[in-house]
Image (tube, rainbow, N blue to C red; front, side):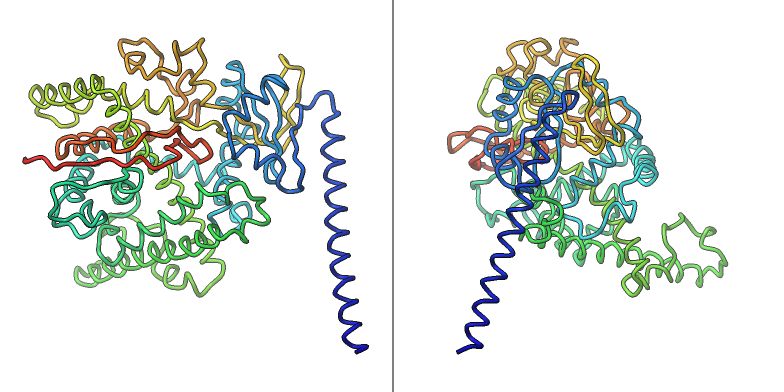
Length: 516
């Protein structure tokens, strides 16, 4: 009995200790937030009722409304304490240049990227320098080498798109829907298009071997799991506790599987080249072809040695960031299709333009380039659905002389593309879907001025042109092969997800196959 009483007493004392520690942390954190909010030269701080959470819940419920209300109450600059992060919103147009064009050692894109991807990467991105300035500069240089060769990219895009919509394709449109052999079906484009987009981008940017059966399905599943995590509540959990979130744990497993796939591809390449060297009696790999990033001995010991495994993980993380950036095309295609279906007059004009360009130009890239109205529709869709927040990390304190404020070092500086895209001073009737605003130079679409779907300044998206071309190709394929209609009421966009918003309730479309 005494032993039982002692056990109960110990359990009670332990519980009391845990409660005491929790309350102490809460009180100290609240005091810290309060004292910090009293600093006259720091932006007003919006905290919350719980430590580590801050105002995350209020923000997630209605991000746009929360930012609008905070701006009305606190002015154009204010700080939100979300999941252990201090995010300082700068909502005035005058802040755009500062946000996009400040030097990396003060307003850092790379620091923000590290923060954003932490919920899907089971590695210390800072310790491994995954997204440091040097690493991402090399990655950006590689992108610049890929994207100018648009004709070669376009050939792959067309080949993959045609294959995806081929009824015989085992990894295609009909297989995913389970409607092979049927003339009609129901589809949520937001779910059905990502495998196509990911496969096109990956085969052009990462490795053509990803189209092989032994890699394709696994690769698509890994990317989808990690994408879904970046749209889950895991993104808003304190980074020290993200490993507890079920979505993050799934993403970590998917990431390791992705690293394994890429490792196997590179090993196969090296083995193949070594065989060719032996056959041709060459002594140097440089005599045979392109250089590889890693030699055979390194790759084959990747998962047996911690140092080399971490290097492989770092490379995999950078590759995923490239694939993820291109994946937003699926949302732009789906949203643009819905916007056009709701406005038959614009849909008719898009189809007429497509027919005209095909008849007038023989070169496919020229056809796509001349589809100006379709591009205007894509821009207008992106304007209306680009999310409420884009971030950078401050490496040094940043002064805002106009507001007489200083944003502290370590804060995430943020602007709101949604608010800027709906500012009447730059976009007349901002809540009206009007593609004509992008025609005849009615609006300057240079990234970072009045259009923020592709970023701006020195870090504007280098894949912007490629994304527009890809969207046009897939839109063309959808309109050529099927007739479409909306089957349910289109719900408001969900701005709590990263990137472009999509309807809160899935928008289900009915397709009817055309006789080609």
